[in-house]
Amino acid sequence: MQGVGEDSIVAYHGTSLQVLRRIIETGEQPGAVEVPHQNVQAMVREGDIFMFPIKDRTDIVDDPLVQMEALEEAMDYAGINAFCHRVCERLGWSVFSDGHEPSPLGHELSLKYFAMDFLEGYNFRRIPKFIKFLLQRGYDFDQAARFVNRVADENQGVVLGYSKEVLNGTELIGHTSVDIRVQGVTIDHIVGVQALDKKSSLFLEGLAT
Image (cartoon, rainbow, N blue to C red; front, side, top):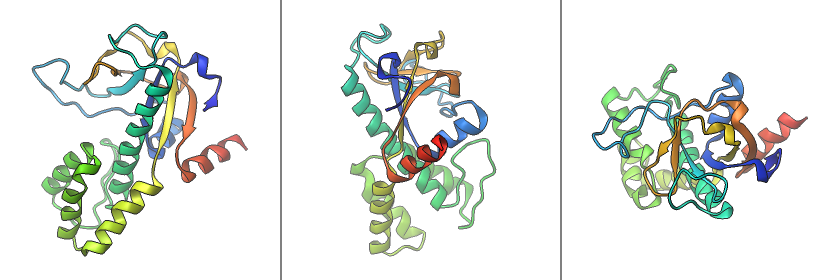
């Protein structure tokens, strides 16, 4: 992982190259869209960023993961986010909720949010549902399958490592016993970056030159 050293990292988060670019441009890390819920643990606050704390470096969660386990969880999460964000780009949708949303396919707003809801919960067991969505948009089956496989293979995203300063008092337990959600994350909290695909590696190499 590129940065100041693994020992200074207290938590990992997996995300896309698009988000990393946004962090560099704005100095702030974009987070989740608000999802209200009566159960505090199920609620998602506007701007929440889900992270995996490392055992013996924080005491926020009851069952923290050792470093390699936390890193592996973040890598899986990066793959999900990278896939979702690249699909949004390919379909002409904005990755970020505060931007303009170009729609070259002329889709209805309700259809956009239906698909976004699916993409946010994307996992490999639900690929057939997404293929069905692509078929409805004019792809044939072979095109849809190639699209999904190519996007998944080419977009694995990045893992970000955070210093202890990211734990600023806004953190809550996440959706499991091993993750947390944090508010107000900025570029200053990031002390390590690991690229998981070729595009992300080339991007980081370009920053270093």
